[in-house]
Image 1 (tube, rainbow, N blue to C red):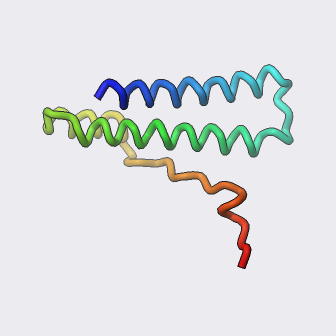
Image 2 (cartoon, helix red, strand yellow):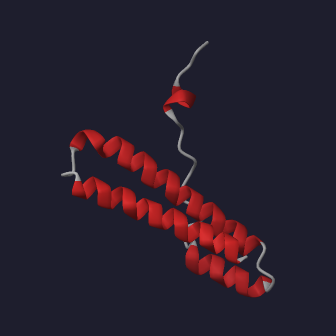
Image 3 (cartoon, rainbow, N blue to C red):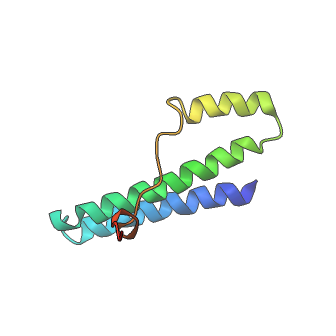
Length: 90
């Protein structure tokens, strides 16, 4: 269980580093789509790891309460498509 929480922490840390790097580079408007894609992808990973953590939580009633507190609107992030996946080759 602690490995899942470590994965959540690392995804959140990487997302904060993306934002910090973007800020340090002068907040170029041309970089915004890449920054948004990276942050949404990392937040999706963190969300999924928290979801898996709660699914494996041994105390089911406490897991339900934690799920309501952590995800009050449900799972809000979806997987981000890459440029490769968006391109139709057929």
